[in-house]
Length: 204
Image (cartoon, rainbow, N blue to C red; front, side, top):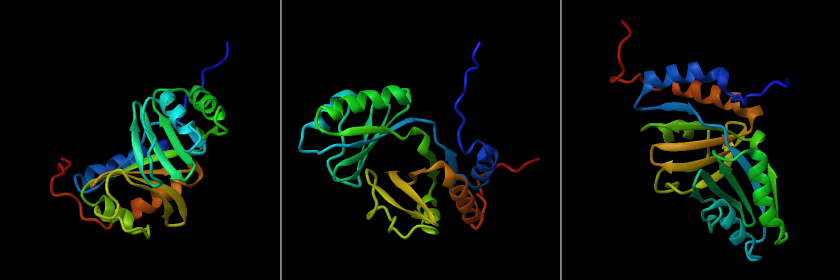
């Protein structure tokens, strides 16, 4: 009988380290692994009707402006460029998600490619989340410049990342698995410069 393969988070080996760091720095900072999701890169001319067709498939609106995102029933839609979106789903299987989106897009001259294995999610939360990210990112991450609903492709240190603002103290990093360990090490090193939380429980 064939063995069943279980998907494993590329940063699973860092989980204990991140949990310990987050416990020490909460509520100032928390670094958390994001769940595994199905992800497709969608390319379609927004004027062709393809975006409307995809919206019917994914059950939610695609963002109208580049560098913004919208919520989907089980994921999100991020507009990366004039004719490019990243669509995620925590409920669908990668192959099903790609097929459904691609079928809608190809009818209008577009296409969708499964990039689930090329995306790893890390959450940076807490009152110092933006300050931490600013140590390695050249973007102006102040809430008035990078408010909730915005996203941006940028560099964090030497790694290309997709940064997504979910709230003033709630930011999402999407990075390729091959750079994920580097990004974690960069953030952990920077986070050690923050003072431990006064609210944490002392170990007996």
